[in-house]
Length: 297
Image (cartoon, rainbow, N blue to C red; front, side, top):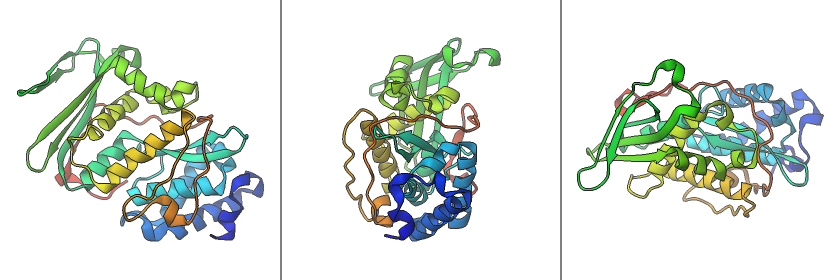
């Protein structure tokens, strides 16, 4: 483990901005061999530093947790940028007062992972508002219809009644998952938002509701998962468990993990997010077609 990472558990804000930038660049280069092909270490580090300027609390996080956050996002191939919506770096305060950096995967991040898997032909996620026509049935002849009718001025979080995700595989199999508003709030409460912390739920409720539907769909056991999707789901599950006071147990995933990439261990989190800053960016009803995928952010 490098000297830069060995100093980790004290935070790096006091060391000055230049040293912080060097530290982030060193971490990105150290983990670069494990990154997805389209992730370039220098650009990736700059993206994280931009987020740190948006949210200075990230500069107070210890280097070990920053390393795990960057390595995890880089291996999954997700950009740590709020405006891009793929993944959010989040500062959290531990019970001992120290700060750690963790990651929340955005719904666009799960969409990218689904496209990259090679199994998915199309995936979409939407929220349903109070005046929309919305019907679905489960069983042998499963159907789902959604006709948006709510006026744009009324498309606010308070009027959301459901969120749903749909997925079609390359072999034509179709899946969908529907969450009603009670399901959505139950899932929100499992994370840091349920502990009265500031999270993306506060600024991007519709996007987070759509992400919850995607997460429910992908974790339901029927949809074929890539290693990257499975790793993202497991990573977020561990974050939820940590917030609930459970212990985080880092078990190496097949072939690679963030911890093994950096040669470090993750410190237990027992307190939730205290602050984040990012620009709202969701676009309602985004549909992702696998053939149109390219490597743009």
